[in-house]
Amino acid sequence: MMVEVIEKREILSKVIAEKIREKLEEEPTIKAAINIIEVNVRSIRPPTRVVEAIEEKLRAQQEAEKARYILIREMRLANATKMRLIIESEGRKQATIIEAEGIKQALELIKTALGNRTDLLIWYLFVKGLEKFNGTIVIFVTPGINKTLPVLTTLPLK
Image (cartoon, rainbow, N blue to C red; front, side, top):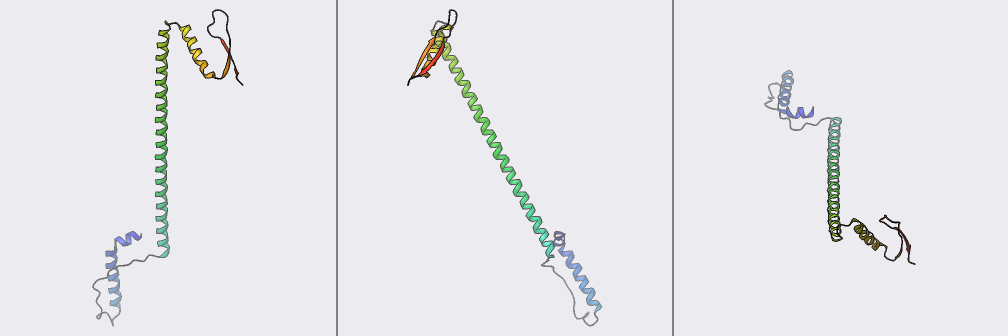
């Protein structure tokens, strides 16, 4: 409503000028003494409650814009975190695949060096696995015939 009044200021000025002319015509003592040429509306002061309503509306719009900005920012941060986690996961996946390929190639080379004997490869891996028991007594209980892996028991050295 106030925006419309401001936008139609020129029309309002003409209406006001016409109303003043009409009132002056009603007064015979001054009607010939005063001639209204033009009225300019320069300052429009709406009622206090209208100003307060406009200010409240502006505050609400600013709050809504702030909330929208925060929501967009949070969504961007969440998306960036998601993308970072996906990239890290892909990196771990590729590293695991590369490591597994390396182990596979190494085992194939060792098996070839052992004359393609799987039983010797298993013993080799068993002995390599014992390296992690540094400082521990390892007791082997050998299985019967046709068994390839011994039973392993460890006792700490203290």
